[in-house]
Image 1: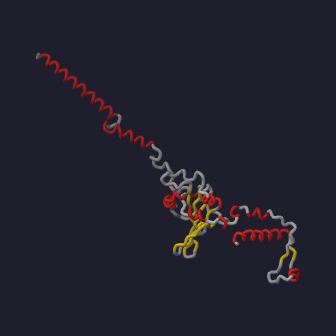
Image 2: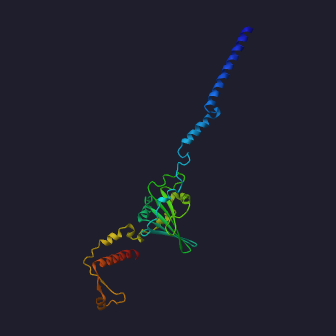
Image 3: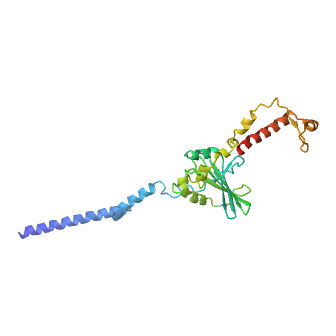
Length: 263
């Protein structure tokens, strides 16, 4: 009986020793592989975070780095659709074409190619131009948390040169206007009366006027100081050459065409 108890005690001691050796071997192996047994789960999560898009620094471009894409716009045919006055500040807000206003009034997105320009005055002196332009694909290099759709921004001096400014502030400000397509003046576009804008802003007026046949028209020039009696007109008038005639006719017809929208 005593011999059996001694044998069982020896066997139990050998088993415990073997288990202890196995645990030590496992710990040594993990140590050689650079792992901590209690941090296996967190190590795997860290690797997943590093592979997640946006986790690596520098993946997205610096906000405002595409401002160089925005050039100073041609304001000659642009439409002033609203103005703002605040103390000594006066601002004219332009849009580059009537199609943009039509889109807004039809409940549509502002089209690619839309340019909105703020012309700012202070104490009656031109102070700055702030320009925002929308193009398909613009802004895709920025973080989704920072971009303002497909808009880029630029700040110009009164001389129409690029101003030395932190253009990233424009993104921060306009980001709050996502509901209004990132514009502060969308409601003004909705309310603007397009009937007050001649079709020349759609680049069609010149073609319409030029299409009027004038070959058989006889044009004479009347001195500015003359009264309109028949005799004076005939005496003081002179014949006008074809080239000069064409230019005068175009000017007169264009003036008549534009005046019909003012009356």
